Image (cartoon, rainbow, N blue to C red; front, side, top):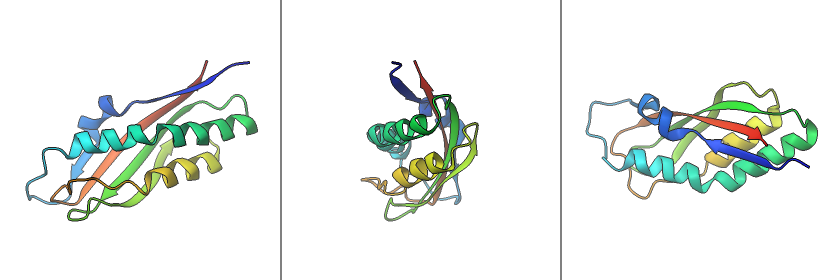
Length: 123
């Protein structure tokens, strides 16, 4: 039996993915906090992927996750899959839902949008 694994490819895409909506100063810890928060969600993302594999053993690919983060609360205000090479709608909903409850410990100071690619593959 093959074991499911997945990789969060956030570090590579982080520099390309963080967009400021304001000209105010961004908290310098924001990028690291987002990556850390996504890493803490790996177990949930893996569960989403395992469920998709049960529906279709050929499931693999990448999902582009768009997060919008509130400037003063650090809460994710929007989490959605913008693009995906994986067609499984339930998996997309699961991944976006898992990221929707992220809250940064230090608010970014400005509204932030970030795009993070997550790669799912099994070995």
